[in-house]
Length: 155
Ligand code: DAT
Ligand code: MG
Image 1 (cartoon, helix red, strand yellow):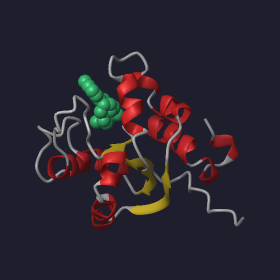
Image 2 (cartoon, rainbow, N blue to C red; image 1 turned 60 degrees about the vertical axis):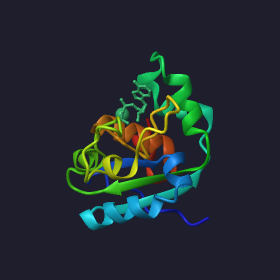
Image 3 (cartoon, rainbow, N blue to C red; image 1 turned 180 degrees about the vertical axis):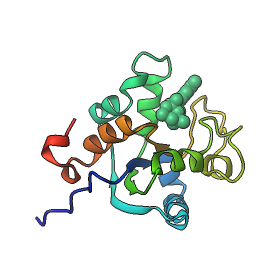
Image 4 (cartoon, rainbow, N blue to C red; image 1 turned 90 degrees about the vertical axis):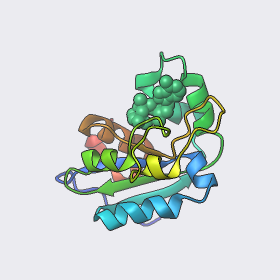
């Protein structure tokens, strides 16, 4: 197996997920198109059915929340697409591109505002995830793309 290029630790990266609802609805290209048109650079990309263990680690901050079990089940409802995106202030920039968590009130023009809605299932299905801080981005990229991270940077 060829070794992938490791991520430049001097540059800022974020973890984007196109969640199972987004993948199923054929929105992967639309989300990637927006990221690329904004000028950010794709550094890693995979389609994956996430394990319970991976999702429990990914959403560790929400472990005690009432919606945790349903959230993990939704994230396992089908394959998803995991992406590492690079660019100056990309964490903050992609959070703005995503829009608010609840798609009903997410601003038009954002990914969630334009592409997501309430389907009456009781579950928030909002198409995308984006890391919310440098610490979360480092931790999440190590989880989803261990092959892109320097040994001594693994969390
Ligand atoms: P975000 O994805 O905008 O960072 P978050 O980290 O607070 O939002 O929550 C992670 C995911 O959990 C979110 O995308 C959808 C789900 N979620 C959040 N709050 C919820 C709630 N009150 N009820 C059901 N699901 C919720
Ligand atoms: Mg979050």
